[in-house]
Image (cartoon, rainbow, N blue to C red; front, side):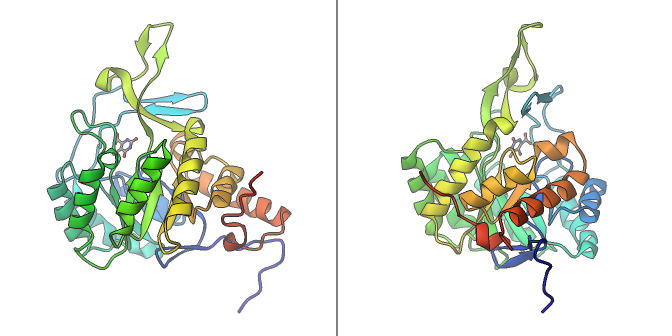
Amino acid sequence: MTKLPLNKPNLSTKIADVNFDSYILNASGPRCTTETELHNLGQSDSAAIMTKSCTLVAREGNPEPRYKALPQGSIQSMGLPNLGYKAYLEILPRLTQYNKPIIASISGLSINDNVEMVRAFQQSAADLLEVNFSCPNVPGKPQLGYDFEQTDKALAAITKLGDKPLGIKLPAYFDFNHFETVANILKKYPVKFISSINSIGNTLVIDPETQSPVIKPKAGFGGLCGSYIKPIGLANVNAFRELLPKEISIFGVGGVYTGTDAFEYLLAGADAVQVATCYQEQDVNCFTRIKNELAQLLASKNYQNIDAAKGQLQLL
Ligand code: RRO
């Protein structure tokens, strides 16, 4: 076994027993819709290639303007623009050359849609399946993760379709009763990971100059992202880490821009972090930068690897 120099911590991690070379990957959403974008991720330092959430048929998404950068994040209502799941089934084998995990994100508009797509991706080149229970931006379609009965029903249907590790992208919860209810539902099924959190749905940013919302769809209501939501993401990751068995891995998502942000998710108990708005606003080099920053921070605190620091939140 090669010994790493003391000052170079090992950032490798595991999600659902799948090896990831580092702790930092892209989140579903920004710059992961087209084949070109997915190859860019393959060539980057992102620890995996995560696809944009797909639906049965291709979608243009919501009318523009539908994304607005804000001082500490963004608000968006993209409306699930994607190529349709069959296109991703064709693209994925061409991404295996990068030798890193491929995660297919699936966001059916009904339980039946999710069943059809999960069944198909179980036979695909994807290594993990992330089923999105929390898209806030399709008019008339509530976030599945806020309906506990439907969440239970959907999990029963999609967790019996094959052996690839399947996880769920959750919305943010704000009440301990909800954390417990959701954890108890997840524990009934062979869910291998969660991704927590999605954007905070149905927020409103108003430009006082124009007296208008800053985005067009849904009368300006959209998902809030970036640094604004990091404390909510940290709380959700930490609450679920306490409530779920260790065998269920956790991706922390929400407001990761720096190695310090990634470290905070690590202290909260995350097994890896996904980067969304920072990647949208910057470029693939953000994965290299965040990785280096996290390595440097861990070294300065004498942590030699991810496991050494995981969950090391020190309560007051
Ligand atoms: O496409 C979107 O509007 C979108 C999705 Br699918 C999601 O899961 N979360 C989000 O903030 N936007």
